Length: 231
Picture 1 (cartoon, one colour):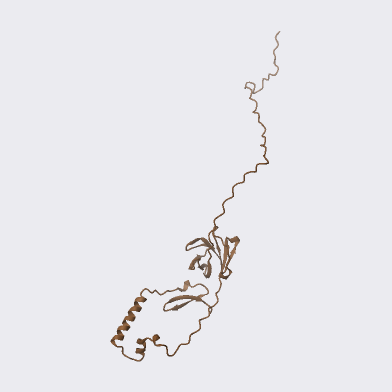
Picture 2 (picture 1 turned 45 degrees about the horizontal axis):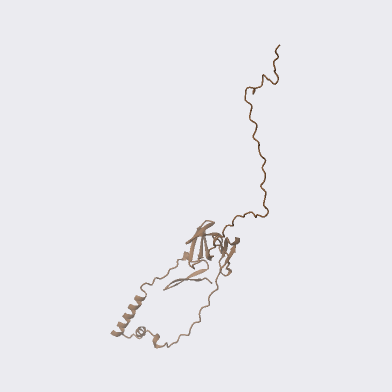
């Protein structure tokens, strides 16, 4: 009589014909490296400091507003007057050789200017209306009205000036005296020298729209100039 060993046999086992799976890999536990207390950890090298350029300041000479158009007159670091037409923008570059400086409109007597990161505002100048703000990243420029300069004392004019100050040709004309040929020759030579001396003279003209606020134009035969308007 034969007996069949059916122990462990499952007719309905779906994996009974598949090979046995390999055992999972053995994971070694991570062991922290020992720390040597006598060895100092290396620190990252600090970044080199930014090389600062000399501070360049601008002085506010006037602000003009026509409708929404905003025009600012500045005295540049080279003492030249530059005109910055901001239009209706809130912030604009100064340009004119200073593209890294930006103006921000404020009031008719004050503007704000942003400095470059490598040339910040470090020294204020209250006498010129320059006040550093925002940690030197910017400055406020305030219009400062200069004091009027007293005119020089008028010198007494002598009724009888010395002979070396008298124009002999004008004196002869006042007396209706006819000039001699020699005097006419001297007059023509003097006029020729005068024309030669001033042949390259160019009269400076300042337009009304270029006059900063607080200033006025004085027009003379030799050219226009700006003076404080104390009227």
